[in-house]
Structures are given as C-alpha cells and as structure tokens.
Image 1 (cartoon, rainbow, N blue to C red):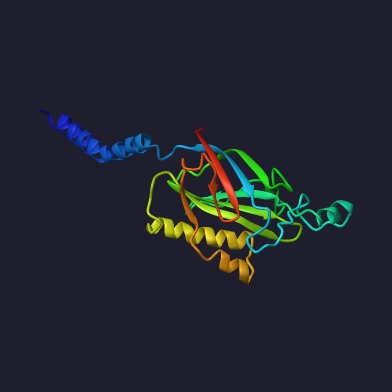
Image 2 (cartoon, rainbow, N blue to C red):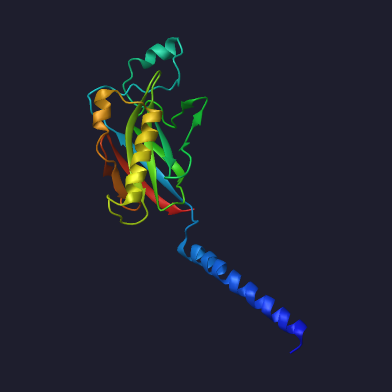
Amino acid sequence: MTIGRFLLWSRTFRLVFVLKPILILFLTVIHCGVARAETADISIHVHDKQASGIAWRGSAIPSLVLGPAAFGQLHNSSPSVSLCKFSRYSGVDCLGFSGGNLHSPCPLAYDCKFEGVVFPNEHMFGLVFISQGMINRALVDAIIVTRATISRDDPEVLALDDRIRAVAASLAPPGPTEAIRRSPRWQVIEITKCEARCPLSQSELKMSVGAR
C-alpha cells in the first residue's frame, strides 16, 4: 500500500467514525416520530356559570365599544371561548389572537369546536381555554396533554404545570377567589383518552385526534 492510499484510507475511516453517531441519531429520531405533527378536532362544552357562580359574559366585540350591540351583550351570560396551546419550551399560540384580543370562532356560545388544531411536536403540551369578555378575560379550563401514560409527579409534568399557571395568569389575571380555585395542579390527560367527553373543572372536553 502506498503512502497516498494509506492517508486516503485513514481520512475516510476517521470521517465514517465521526459521522456514524450522527447518522444513528438521525435515523432514531425519524423512527420514533419525534418530529411528527398531529391535528385534532377539539370540542368544549362550558358550564352555565363559572365555579364561583358568576356568569361568563363573553363578548363578540373584543373591546368595550359603546353602542346598541355592546349594551345588548351585557344581558348575554354565555362565554366566548378561545384556545391557546404551547409546550414547556415553545411560544404560546393562541388561535384567533389579533389586535391584543382573542377572537373566538364561536362567540357567545356554551359549545365551541376548534377544527384541525395542530398540536406541538413535543411529548407533552398545555391547552388553555379562555373566554374573552368586553373588558376582562376569564379562564375556562387548562390541561396537560401527554402522548403516553406518565406520572403526575414527573419533573417535566410539574414544570409544564407551572408554565400553564403562568400563561393562564398572563392571559386572564385571577382575583383572590379565582386564584384559590386555580391552586390545585392541572389535570394530566393522555392524548387519546378524550374521544369521549372528559370532565374538567368548568367544562367538558372532547378531542378527536388524527395524523396530519
């Protein structure tokens, strides 16, 4: 073997040695479906009143605008539900958010359906349901969704629980009574377990999951 061939063989061997772990990791990611995206149709039925007994008083007008339409809504006690989704590390994606307001696809209604919702790619993520009022917002419910069975005491679950609490407080700041209601940890629900209705604190939820 000539010196030139030996050097070429040596460089090729080192290159394969370096790239092999990267190739194995790449194939593992593809096989495990870490990068997959899933969609779901999410339906929510909101209870007639908040847990405190207060009416929802949602709004089809996402700001205090004087006029007959605005005053007419003062007598409507139903919510205007919007959905926000996020993982532990991703940004908060609120469907229908514009101009600093949440625009519900079904304003002033106790039943709302969100079609083709794209879930975050991570193995667990949060869903927060907010009712936009004329002045204030109200938290309807929030849950942790997982792709597999996991302990409620898992460190990642606890971290996501804290993030949901912070996001909910940012979107719908609680008063003293509401802060107490939110003090228990959020429900942890496996992604396929809500094809029938899942009872939450102030609503019932249904998720029909399908691959994108």
